Length: 117
Image 1: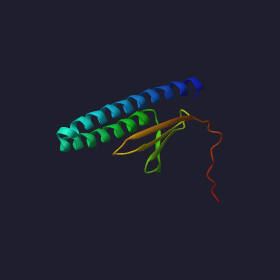
Image 2: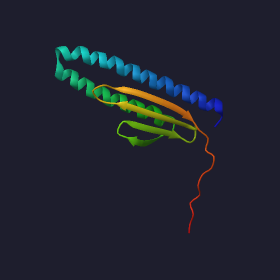
Image 3: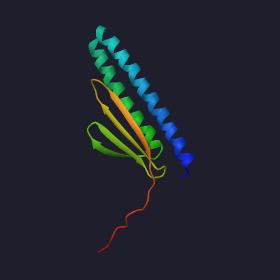
Image 4: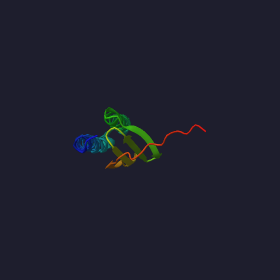
């Protein structure tokens, strides 16, 4: 894939993730306001919001052809050979969402061929 195309995909992913994380911060403020008045409603809202954010991230990256790889409980790696990009997501959930992501470009140098011995 051309460098310019990979740059455009990376920029679109950054915008998408930034928008999702901003929406998450706004939702956290809403939960804080609700907790003082109606704790059960706040807990339900928070749970639904967490599921929506996770789903939105998965949909956004899958749309670009990224494949999911688990690193550990708090980290994910999404790889697209087609675009030559890796997206590393790490976060702490659910009591204090911390999001961090890195987008790394790479080149596939060679592919191992399966040996039939």
